[in-house]
Amino acid sequence: MKRHFILNPNAGRTGEAKVDELRTFFGPGSVFHFCHSSEEATAQSRTALLLGAEVVVAVGGDGTVNSVMNGFFEGDSLIRPNAALGFANAGTGSDYCRSVLEGARWTETLRSGTQVEVDVGVVSDGQRTKKFLNMASLGLTALIVERIEAPPRIPLPLAYPLATVAELFARKTYDVQIESEGGVTLMPKLLAMFIAKGEFMAGGMRTGTEGLLTDGLLQAIAVPNLEWMNLLTALPSLYRGGVGTLPAARRFRLPELRVKCAGGGIPCEIDGDSWGSGEFHFRVLPSILKICVPAI
Image 1 (cartoon, helix red, strand yellow):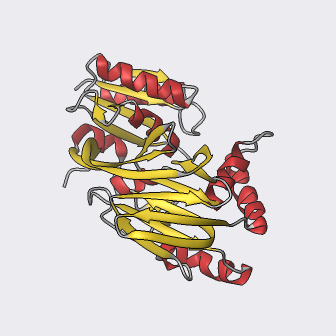
Image 2 (cartoon, helix red, strand yellow):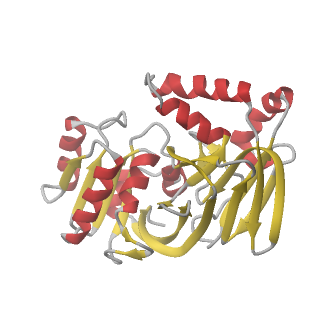
């Protein structure tokens, strides 16, 4: 099998030693490429597919997986429909890998696993379009990502908790309108909104629903502004029961929705990368992309 590995050198568990390890495990026929930007990872993924790669493996976290996956598409169509996306959970988050691998070793999954077709989420701001496998979010979590990405850059193990505390202290809210086939829902003082295709986020926090990968729907969770005490007491439950267990959180399962914000845009992040502010249209491409999963 012709495998092409795309590695993020900043993911934490990649490097030349990792390449040597992978080459020994998978044999000399595999191709390895280090990418230093999201755009390069997408371009290299697309090139590998055009050259006949059967499996393109993202070696990094959720951001790397997202960049590599976007290289599979031209518009809403796959460049090489029979090719599959593989994962190596080498990043700090790797939340989509948690949903897919379910504790299995990714090396064994690539070598002796199987393939399934999963949904892909699509988000557009009217000018740009990007796809996601795991999660897009609006509001608080997008502001946290913006703060992490802003200079001076702080190492991620420290940057994430510092940015989270700062944004929780500010607790900026948004008056939003959610449009869907079911009508219009007004959400004043929205703190955050999560649009999920994966079951995990933020390093293992649950969305609260299983079976999202192939249901043809988006799981949207809108979280209103909460008092400090409610936030603190709810934190432990996020890793057990999911974001949907937060007080007054509203949940939607839809194939498509639009989010508009009064008085301007709302910030957005996609699989851990900031994507600016605006009004956003979310939809799903059902069972379109082949991915490598553990053998049953």
